[in-house]
Image (cartoon, rainbow, N blue to C red):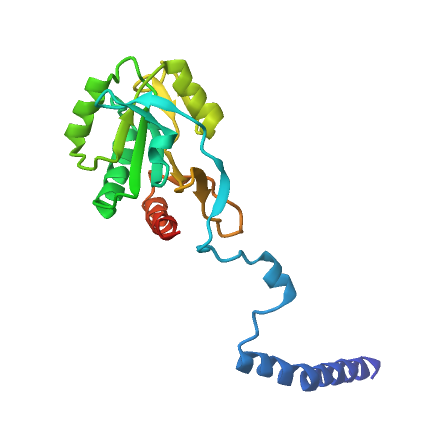
Length: 228
């Protein structure tokens, strides 16, 4: 008898809960708010693609020689939006893909005098101006604003690692004898390194030149800077 009373009591509590809760749940479904709430909002990433790109800092000063034996500096590109990379012509790994990405950018903005590309070799002993010119011809480069640069080895490594914080190093154990990042730096008309924010609102700093999405994002952000 006592057990039966306990069952009746539990059933009564469940009935009261149903009368109170079910209408509220139905209402939330109808309003489309069943997945909303402070707890979920706090873990949701912020949207990306802000039109206003973040300023990382001024591009470091540089002075190097291009494929035509002409001196090129950061001031050469003042007033232009440009993309900068570190590479080397004999690279058997990531450089061909980086070259392909740069060619996409060249084609996209070809004929725009306010856009340029800078490719700095990390193997200046082999990548003489003559070798760089042959490499540009091999790639089919058409833009007069795409400079392949060479110079003193220590100077270039300092420029990469300390100036741009884009890793470049010599390692005889890896294919080609050098290792480096596949990242591209985006520079605005005033000589500032710029970038977009990621999904969580943090600056990405540099663009992935080995990734289709990275190159697509870079194309979009070049357009933003060209309009500034």
